[in-house]
Image (cartoon, rainbow, N blue to C red):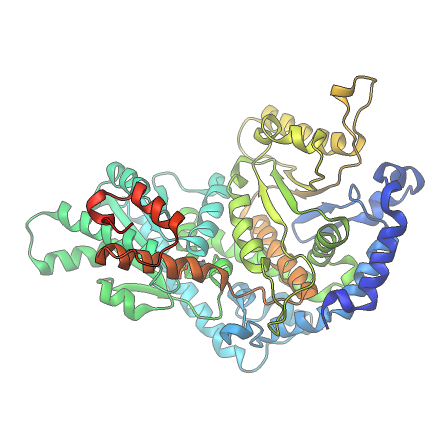
Length: 537
Ligand code: F6P
């Protein structure tokens, strides 16, 4: 049964029809003095104020009923039991195991013992984690290595990049971090222009070790590296490659064939976009050190425990996911704006785009039936205050309502306290402006207000809080995926483009464009050199 066939869905739809036009969040504040208390809560490392949203206790109660009718609690148990819930790929989704302490941590303390079969996986996780952190410490101590270049894309890029940026107050000076993901040669080329091969560690991060962009970048980096060594014997080249190239992958055989001797493995039950906690986190561990990396894992684990142990009504990932469903399916909002008032979180929107849209941008349910409801919203954004001077105009006066998610830090860290106070005040003022609006008789200044926002507050952007924040988003995405009845852990939609790119690449080699549609052929004719395209295009 799909979510829109449940009784709870029908009751939400009816409620929505009844409240349609006269719903006003400002009124709700006026008539309910406990609104803030009810809709705000503390979760591990994250305080959330959800009171400036277009919902009330009745809506929330019915959303909770929807969650229960869609068997959210049972799916959560299946996730944490290591069941193969990624059915199309016959895999479990056990990113949570990557941050579980060896003794089971808070989950074991709460009575949620690890399934017998998973004990071995946990041992393997800790074995690899120890090896990864030892390597990270070795690189950190090696003053000779000044530059670390991570070559990877999607989940093998965005998590480490957002984390290294977010934790920059904890990054030990003396090393520079570069992230190369795009197949556009400018990205790699500019990095190679700036680094010295003798002082550079290349990390080839790819779960599959087959992703076309990463493999081309890795080959080009290897070619450049070998060329820089100049006329040395193959044995010396191999030795140098072994010292300066490391692979993070589930496909250690392919990495060895590439000439890499040091590979840190992970497992097919770690989805690419959920892999920050695995060996894929090596750049983060090099940047902040083993102890801080463990703190990041601990923060995420604390959020796992919150998600597993807290009743749905006070469960932050669940509440956020239900709000997402309410907005997407009942209010008709097609996007959500992420406004992190933190320079450290400047890449969070890109990270969340993959996490949410690759996980939940789906059109069929777990049984392969077409869905009768909308799924993932578009997630987008820029850090505050920059966004205020760009697209906030539309958020305040545009014809579309876009829920905004603010993130702010109480303690801004080591830089310039006056700036931090200004940053925080701006974040709160924007949320207030969205809610209150303005009408002073001049139509051009009319801001309708009643525009929804959520506000997440971290004590400070330290490794534990960052880990908790990311885990919060992972579980939120899982919950909305469960309500929509989809598999949030596969990504078949990205395959078609890869296949067609391969096909066009092969056609280019054969100079054969027969049967290609007129637009595609014409574009290639304009984009590729004449001798490559040939007359048939
Ligand atoms: O194309 C999408 C995708 O498969 C993502 O899911 C993944 O994170 C990314 O490509 C990179 O894959 P890999 O780590 O195997 O190179």
